[in-house]
Length: 482
Image 1: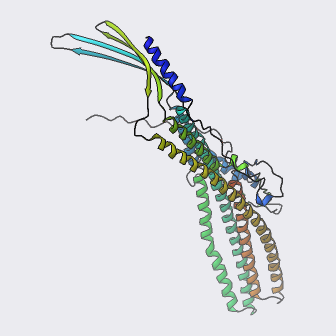
Image 2 (image 1 turned 30 degrees about the vertical axis):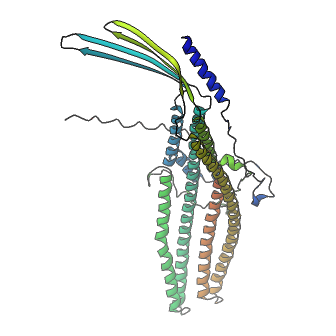
Image 3 (image 1 turned 135 degrees about the vertical axis):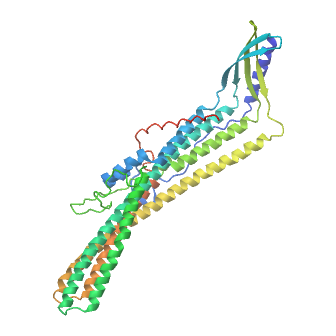
């Protein structure tokens, strides 16, 4: 017994001495030299970004209902949530430093003489793995980083869902608006055709004018089926994004079908003013899931380096077992206890593994910096596009007002021979083109507003309602024997 104690003491002393030589590289969060503001907002006061529900600035109840439905029913989010559960379970499955095991057996033996022998045996074993070099701790840190990565991937999936729902909704409203404009254009051209037909019957117009007007009516009518199909396709896409089959979405997508935009509308159709809350560049570290994923990947790579370095040194464990045996009613007991010292295998080149993982960690750090730079570029580009689309909408609305005035004046003059039929047709074509251009610019403005907020990472951590528990796995059907 004294020899056992001396062996344990010597092993612990040796491990303690070696642990003093083990290198320690504590993790340091990567740093980036952010500017105080974005290039497009140098004159603005820096503010922290707090714009989690940016889509609410559209002031659109239908859109809000769609997003609520998508956040609770999206299959992509459900899959991402399960990855978080898997990562947490993986961490819990990492063996502990100390383990305890219990085994038992019962044997019955017979012979030709008819003598039987029953034998029972039970054993209680334990093992305690010392970790002076932090190998197990590094493994736990690496596994924990997978939980953070899975959580960031869930935020990324949520941000992508917000992007897809809002963009598709904007496209739906644009298709509905263009369809409405084409229908109005059709009615206007049918009225013009009636006017020209009347003038032709009065010998005030020629047959060419009538045919040209008929061709314009036919051309306008031919555009309607495609636009109607576009509207239905957008509705089906929104249903799938919300996690239901097309045609089963219990949200009326025809109610209040107005394009989201910035500029004030008439009193019957108010438009909210959407101001982008962009915050400061450093907010990207907190809000952009891709940056958090890159940082956690770097953290995991650093932990892997620590685990590889721990493999350079011997591993000490203390183990033992107590065994009880009974044969034909006679019992006995035995036990053992002692240290186990494992040395690195010869020829395994553990130092090469350390260098390889260190190189992988440096690559992860470079990836993190590149991700941050790309995020800043996306925000700066989105700011430029957003500002340009604001100006484009303002110019388009002024163009529409002027062409409507031209059309009204032309209709007034044509009855007094102050304008030709060709002038009337040109005025109608100009107003139709101006209306379509305005609708497209409003669509681009809304999408640029969405892109800007998504590039800022806004809404990635938007709180969700608690997810419903997963359905139970189907019961296994028993297989009948032949």
